[in-house]
Image (tube, rainbow, N blue to C red; front, side, top):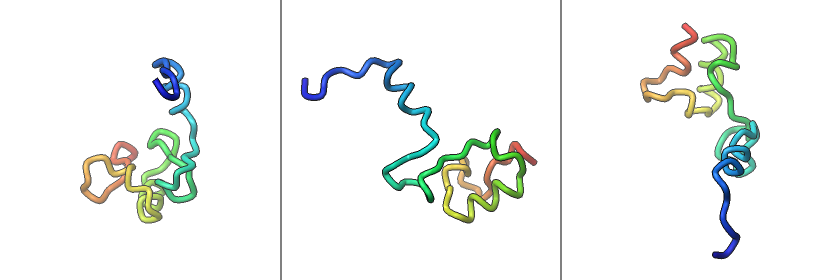
Length: 66
């Protein structure tokens, strides 16, 4: 196979990076709700384009932080 086989543990190790070089998120940084710290900050990040923080698509990010 071209490129070889990627072992599952190698694939998962590569996903832990906080930076995404392909430009899919603003600034190349991906945030996690538990690391943001406040509901207000999560809403600010959502307005900046971090739409992945709104998992259910209702327009509110990280509702667990309320």
